Amino acid sequence: AVALLHMVSVLDRTTPVLFIDTELLFPETLQYQQDVAEHLGLQDVRVIRASKTAMAAHDPDGQLNQTDPDACCTLRKTEPLTRALSGYDAWITGRKRFQSGKRAVLDFFELEEGANRIKVNPLAHWSPEDVRAYMDENRLPRHPLVAQGYPSIGCAPCTSPVSPDEDPRAGRWRNQDKDECGIHFVN
Image (tube, rainbow, N blue to C red; front, side, top):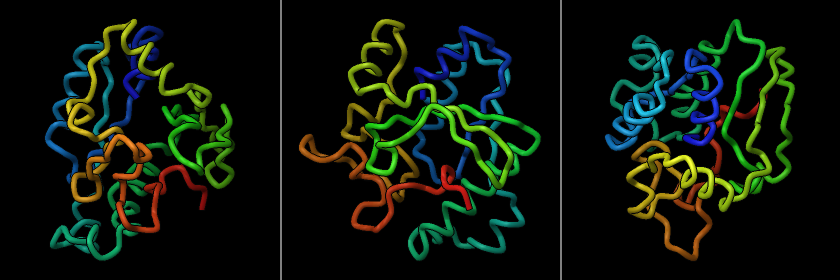
C-alpha cells in the first residue's frame, strides 16, 4: 500500500486516506502507519475502528478472532469500513493479482453493486518486482515486519511469519479455510 499512498501524496496530499485500526494490529504496524503518513505528508488520514458498543456486544473479551475469525473481521474491518465509505462514489485499493488466488483475476475497476460504488485497483497488474522497484526508486520505507518474515501483514493474532518457500499470504489465518478478511467481498 505504501506505493499507492506515495502516488496519492504526489497527486493530492489532502486526499482522504482510511486506515482501519482493528485494535489487534502489531505495534509495528501502528508505528509504520504514522511514519508513512508523516514521510509522505498525508494531510487527511482517518483512523477508523469498530464502535465501542459493537465491540462490547460481539467481542467483550477480545477473543472473537479465536472462535470465529470471519465474525471478527466483519466486526473490526468490514463494518467500520462500510460506514466510513458511505457517501463516497469510489475508493482506491492497493490490491494486486499476485497476492492470492482469488485476486488473480482482479480488474482495474469493480462495481460494488450493493453500495453503488466503484472500487479502483490501479496496481492490479503489478508484480512483486514492480512493487520493490517502485519502493526503491522512491525511497519508500518498508514495514519493519517484512524483514522478520512477514510478507503479508494483518492482525497480530491471525498473522504468522512465512518461510521463503511458502506463498507470501500463507501466514494469514494459517491452518484455516480463510485467505481474505472480507472487506473486498460484495454481500
